Length: 262
Image 1 (cartoon, rainbow, N blue to C red):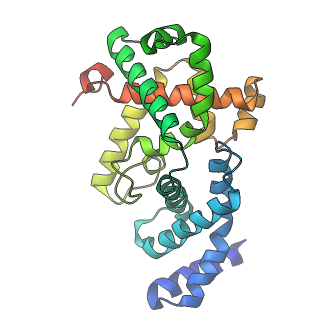
Image 2: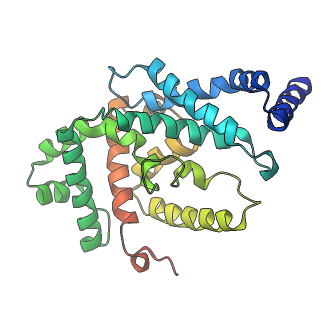
């Protein structure tokens, strides 16, 4: 194990010192399993017509970008940094090919606005009946709509904290858990975002909070979460989607209503 770690350290030193193409290629090969891991997690919530092999191809660009830009002097693990970049590359490509139909995007925006409006009015998480009434739907129609758009929500949390489509120009949940101890400004921003996000998640209903925690922080797949909760994978996907809408609504609340002091 130590020999392998030493070899990787030597490759990093060689690449960053001499820009050796061979060292770079060997680093890409060494870290390529990360791409498959991230692609597998993203693919779990996408339609079957999206090939995981395509996601791996998109993610490889993120890995290469991460290797090129990684700063050894900052003192945190490359894997933490790379996973965020790989996921960002995959999501950017999915956005660029517009894999979600416009009608589905429109429904998602309507539900998001309804959650945000009701959160502000009721000062609590609205139930399904209240959301359905706000949208002029029956509860059955709302459930069917949620099922229709459930796969959209899997990448939504990665977009949630971002300021744009450029993966280098915004913050994601992954960024909030990276080690930024050597950058005081980044550390402050990360701590502040963690506080806001934790507050929003902690005020969510138990099941939605558990799904977000297991998926984003414990790394479980949707099927594994279904086994934990005793429900189907599709049901977990629906719960995840509902949780994302609730979380978006909470993060759109005025700062004073979240209980965060500025």
